Length: 59
Image (tube, rainbow, N blue to C red; front, side, top):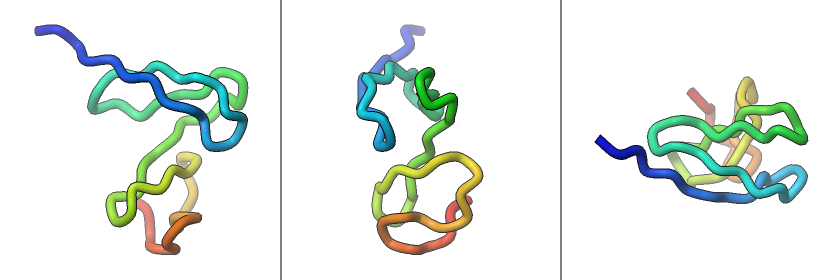
């Protein structure tokens, strides 16, 4: 089974991040794992309680 890789930008430092589908991306320059809000798709640092975009609780 081939892993699907995607490239995105870190919302904090704008660095290119390559990540594998079904895994949260890790930004090397920031040393943070980035999670996605299930409600609005906003990006946040892992450990953040509420989405910075919509304010809903993050799991």
